[in-house]
Amino acid sequence: MSEKKSSEIERETLKQLTVRMLAPTPDNYQSVYNEIADIPCVPYFPLDRLRDIARALPTHTSEQEKQRGLLEYAIDCTSWDGVKTALMAYGGFVTLATAESAAVDMAGASALTADFMTQIGLLIEYCQPALGTDDERFNEQTEVMIKALHQSGADIATIKTMLVNYCRRLSFVAEDQSEIKTVLLKLLHMVFENIADLSPDEQWLRGQMDSLVTASEPPLTLRRLDDVERRLKNVIFKQKEARDRALLVQNELRDMLKAFVERLSEITQSTGSFHEKLEESARLIEQAKSMAEIAPVLKEVVGATRTMATDSKIARNELIAMREHANLTEAEIVKLHQELDRVSAEARHDSLTGALNRKGLDEALERELSTVRRKETPLCLALLDIDDFKKLNDTFGHARGDEALNHLASVARECMRPQDTLARFGGEEFVILLPDTPLDRGIDALTRLQRELTKHIFMVGTEKVLITFSAGVAQLVHGEVGQEAILRADQAMYLAKRAGKNCVLGA
Image 1: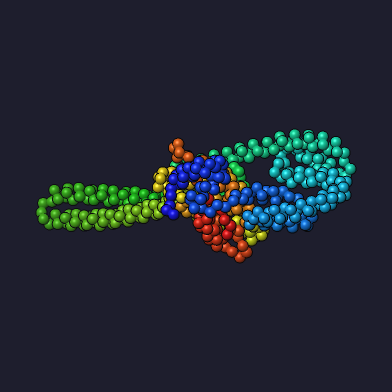
Image 2 (image 1 turned 90 degrees about the vertical axis):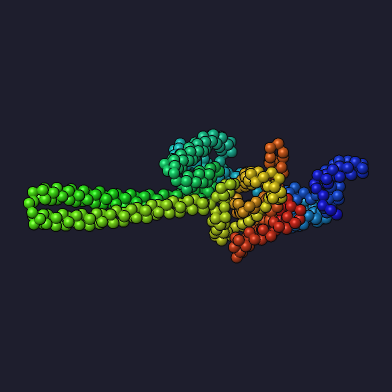
């Protein structure tokens, strides 16, 4: 069958719906469209909805837990028969589980209140470091509240009243801490901007300061603050290096200028003595009455001229040496600026999208691998590639292609958690690091991003352009390095492309 354009298939689909007298429902349209386009017609399988249902099912008994596991497995395999069997089997254990649960609830009812109070007390204790210790009255109120919550046999009504008053005070303290954090961030940004303004000619410094401002934007996490600290240390080191080199150059120039002035003074003195010698010789020649009296005078003039010529030659050589040294110093300064420009070019962020570049990705990946080895937590790496990006560039131009990349990066940042990391891997490819995330949740995260892209329409003038991507997700396995996991994700991404694009596959 010859390939058809999408618009031709759409027109033929509408025509066939009319000819076959079929209602224009989404299912009928999809079925006829797939038939005309020669695409396998696979019944819709609501993975996300079914997974939500499976997670919501209670597991009071081992039998229920087993059946829920079978249900989740059937959902992953997109098997309707498996889902039906698992649900029917799960239903057989509901009555027994309810009776057992009721018995447990009756047995633990007496301990519920005391345990609940203890948990609230622990919650307040854990939140205390984030609220600070500046408000003495609030600190006293906190101690009284915790003591009352841990006290056995406390009156519930009294505790409730104390909690209401405490929550009111807590809201004021939390607002103060939030305002303090906001003001401190503003001051930090002012410092960054001021440093950049102090050196308007240093483009490398301006680039680093802009990166620092971006990195310190809310929401802040320990990982982002660590990134800010490393960047600031790098800027301070380079700035100190430039300052020390500038001071050294200034001292060298000062020494050369001093030597030049001293030498110029010597030349001036020598020239003055030479002129005096010439005037004295001219006077003696005028007074001479014979060649015998003139000969000694001429000898002295020749000697003084020869000395003057020697001194001039020495001074000329010294000035040439000073000029060559100045040129070398200037070349070193130029080299230093080139090095600073190179450092700026190797910054950790992609200049177009603001995401990490390959260098930044390598550093972020190394940090995540260190965390995985230390805490033994799961780590997922997703590699996504925009579908039909070349066609988009050819149709609308490379400027619109750049805007599409920015659009994807912006939507991705909105969907990501603060601990996730976005990096531009190259061209239209991006990598997302998902810490504390197993494979199934990593696939869910990329699927949610696909849905968000369909909600955030990319506009080219007045035309709506749907941007989609294919992605592969790999969970790091024991003994594997980051690049190997990215390679597996890349292979899964290509399989997703071959499967029809706009889908996510696990590696």
